[in-house]
Length: 227
Image 1 (spheres, rainbow, N blue to C red):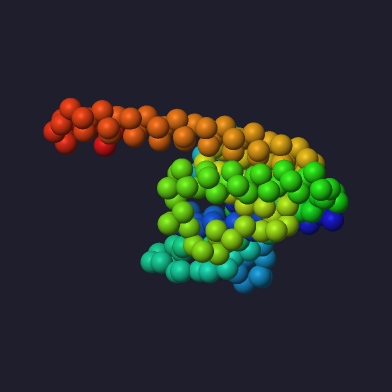
Image 2 (cartoon, rainbow, N blue to C red):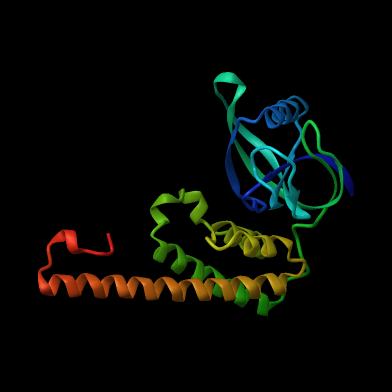
């Protein structure tokens, strides 16, 4: 299925099911949002491949996510703060126009993958355990809403949740969004989470080592180099 949608190129990757707050201040995107609200249209969030978020043309990656506006907070001078939720992935087939804001003809991509085998379920359970450890090591559990801590039971939705929570380079997140095979997506995320948990564990170990080293020598607080 193909359709034309307004595109919002950003320096972020939006996954299905994830929420994204945005501050709209450019005239072209104020117009885009006004028309989306009037027509109850979704917009397409795409990662910028080349160019800048503010002013001038940009080249987006081909795969992005449809986003539904779920909250609007009007600001002075027509600006607004909005909250969107990712819905379905898409691939840009053609850039229809650039002015007054980008419009793309896209084909929708399935959020579901192949039937899930028992082996995939075991990998997903391992992913869930690693994700909780990753969140603990990043010390962000208290910053997440309880609803966000309840992991989906659907494996594809779980993978998208993990992709949204990972703090890794944007191109790495984009590669996860573009995955067409569930086995590939699971193995990539398992590798990333294992790598990041090991990195965070090393960081936590050395922070603790330095704290104990300083405490043993009774150094004054201003010498604490990790602060």
